[in-house]
Image (tube, rainbow, N blue to C red):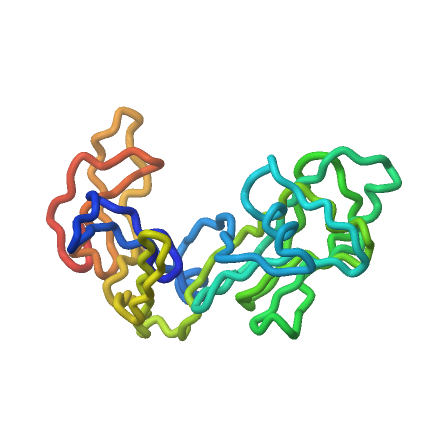
Length: 257
């Protein structure tokens, strides 16, 4: 079961009539720009490219599979699915054993993005020799793309163990802070898939936003009382500081606790 292309974690075993799950986080270009979010691997919905088999092997999250595709102007791509786009800030790629001559074949590899799988925009050229193991390349773009691909003019440039784009998977929606986001629910059972269109709405007006914390320090032994100020705080039910949960929340209102 997924909501807005993200897995919905089940709380209980499904019965013939019901299933409970925890709604996943939905990010938008607005939330990425205005809230402190942590970049993560951009996970594909499906794969595209010169060879679907090799595109899958090189972008399935596993180093145990790899693309050995050999062909001029090869490309290995991913599709994030309808309604989702990737806001990319870098790419990590893993290479297997090679000699010095072979390492230069990755210099001209381009990372490209598209929103129609036809017209492609160059996001970066690797411009560096590959080395065995993990390599990385930073990418700077403010445009999100549904399709991302590794495009090589060299016939051996698609020989790669793993390609992982990092950044943010965002919902393809208006960037206004006031605009709600309506997403589909996808159910999979017994080899069949059913899509329930527009069944869940995320409202930015309900999203907690912290504007200040006072005091900004505490004793090593713990126990310091801090006041958190912001908006939409009435339904906050837990707070962590560096992964350590606060013992309690008190004096809670919509703007502070």
